[in-house]
Image 1 (spheres, rainbow, N blue to C red):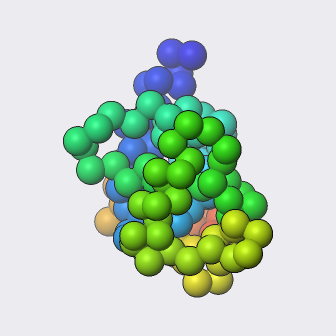
Image 2: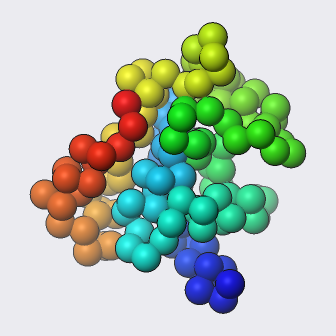
Image 3: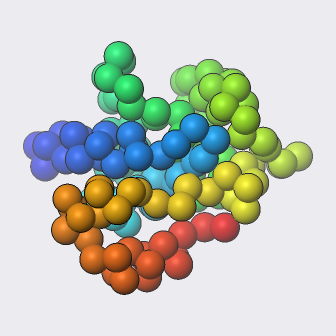
Length: 126
């Protein structure tokens, strides 16, 4: 579990890149952080410290839904307040709200080649 906790700051830095009105899946975030899994991203989101500007509500599951847990209604309200719309089945409309990815500055700082990023991005939902 030590490796998991040690990776949380990297997850938080990347999640801060998701702008208001957009969402990413746990897997989308993990795909840009080598060695991490969607589950680790989920652990990080569940442990998000308050008052640090981490938009935890913008990370959802790969089906476009809010995972059923404590805080799910609060997450849905926060997303709705940001302009996120939901389909009748409760899923976010990926085509309207999918995060397009981090800034070039983040990619450069993380050592992610832009062409590699485009390949990764092509596997994202939506």
